[in-house]
Image (cartoon, one colour):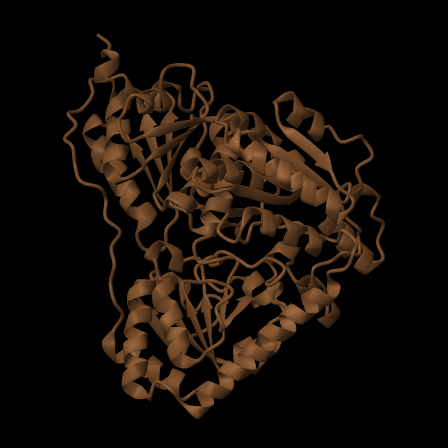
Length: 567
């Protein structure tokens, strides 16, 4: 005898996830009513239906980044699950708290050609913190709550829960309401904190690097206070951007590939580096001369991070905000608040910031270059907007301060070290859904926009009012750039068919504009602001030159051959 809809195990799944602290379930509807259907009637949950599971996983990333809560991706065994893997690869790279809930085919079909049977755990295991197959209804609530716990605690990441078909056809287990899963916070060893503080106060030029792991901890104020006490230049990784106001006197923009000269000199001359909440991935180290010779103090909630990119002199295991606060208190105890060396560092940092701004201003001429387009975009949407980025050649200009300068109230969402093409538009959908009170803007290339186009109807259905700036080089800019550096043919990197994206946008009631002058772009951005209030998508295309290359990319390539550069 089958269960009534109100008694179905899927309602237990939805209720358990809501109780645990999730607020979004994203996916495609299954053949039979499933998790998305149950979530629609569960208080505290919202459902996001997408056209593509790959896009769904990216939307979950964007939503989690803005809401600060774990997101759920609902899929089924077979192509549905496999199609989500690219987005889950990016979620794993970013450390996004994503719970994947999927089905398993009936046991009698396994090994006998069961329809859409897939070894999902084996496919996902390199990407997940934990996977579990629920084969007994009594395991259901436990497995889901444990999944949420692991998704948000330690280094946040992806977890997988498979639910066997037999469980979904059995009587639903009793559901007892439970409190939200808590994010655990812990401080570092006191003696190790003191040792780190002595290294920092004794440093000639300490530098602070804040990563994406600082965001779930809410570590911005603590990191800022620590940098101020040390009079230390403060950098972020791409994932850490938005943690501090980039107009702060000590803020020097991004680290590694995205560093704007002359701030690279501060990184090069630093003797002690304090990295908080960052795995120091390759992009963060790219173009950073001599990093391996510096004294590294590394702070993270995940012990597996230490000794990965570099060996730390001091490894501090703990919550980014708590440990930054511990270090600040220890620094105060070790040295006076104001020193001659600190004053000199502040002056040097101020000169570097002035040099960065002068370099940018000198390049801001009458032509519609990428930096000029990004400046006009930010003037229109303000420094507090939600900024979603891809990682193509030209849109990487947006990672450079002061070309773009974000406030500490902004939300900045970027792909991780996998740099999945097509990440931006679906991530923007998830981000805008999480917070409709602010503008959500996407900066991407034409190739990436086409690859993410499946998310466009969802943005229209939800009246999200996205603004998209497409930097159009008629193809794939990064491969073209690398091939040009190597003197190789670039024919395959160029699109020859007419672009179809504007027609798709207009068919869905959105606005489009193609701008070749600053005045045209300013007018199009005014129209976009009005369209945002109406919930309509605006796509503004700006043709760009192949040689309009971000300064960080040029700096790295001029220094030598690129190693493992983003595609």
